[in-house]
Length: 72
Image 1 (cartoon, helix red, strand yellow):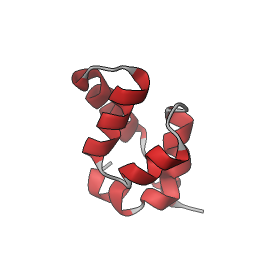
Image 2 (cartoon, one colour):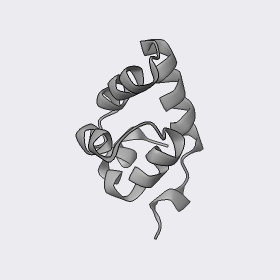
Image 3 (cartoon, one colour):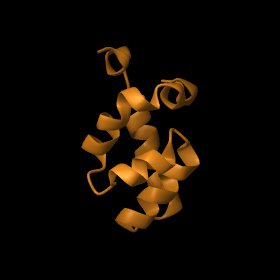
Image 4 (cartoon, rainbow, N blue to C red):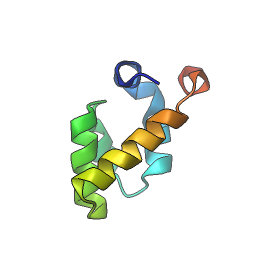
């Protein structure tokens, strides 16, 4: 999945983000607003992850994204 598509459809997939990373608050997700760097920072903050680990988790989550995520 292309991150640009995730960013452009952030409002549609916020629930998927919260399912994956339950420690992120609604405010955190609103602050991220689809920006990958912000998501990485919030994961580091909430989960105590190193930058590399946060990026690896985001990349794995991104690879699982399918077109079904954007359908309602």
